[in-house]
Length: 259
Image: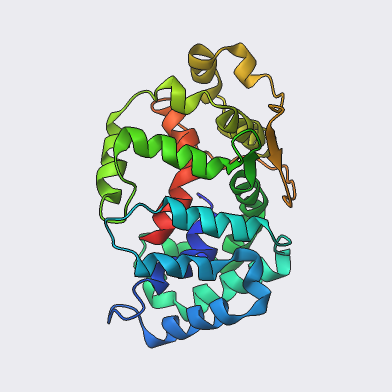
């Protein structure tokens, strides 16, 4: 059984708040999300930063919104397991109608979702909190900008087109893949979830060189306020389009949350 990621559950509320005036979102779910956003206990998620996307045109790039959210999230202490459990419990209860529209969601016991969220959160936060000190820029912002230069504006309206284009590509240009930010992201994923990168390693080595997978952190890439966790078995990658999979674990949970 595939475990749900923390972003898909705990950040689900951020995506829904954008549509809080839609009749498709129940009053109970809106109330749950509003309470989470207002709670000081969830400041470690900086969920309120997502609200800014609601006031931007849906044709506007999401990069600045993501940068503001990640900057705020990384500037405070990480969430505890208790906070993660409370967020997941509140959302799965208060937004059960909305969540059950997701195919297969109802079959996941809440305790398994909580466990998956607590396992994935440290890795997701570490990826978001990587920064390139030479460019004075978060890695997620740098990578989104590089991807946008290839695929076009990363906007809400263009999201489906971007994903469709990604699925048709077998490779990623080296100037996007072979960056120090991506190297350290790969290092983190390989450390935390080693079973997920087996098919990706030779592809990266072929394009970026064997030194790219040597596990050495690039000197200018730093990471702050990010707890580490070692686990495995999420099955995130497939052999075809493996490089896009590496980018997508960094990007899609961020981009898709705003839908």
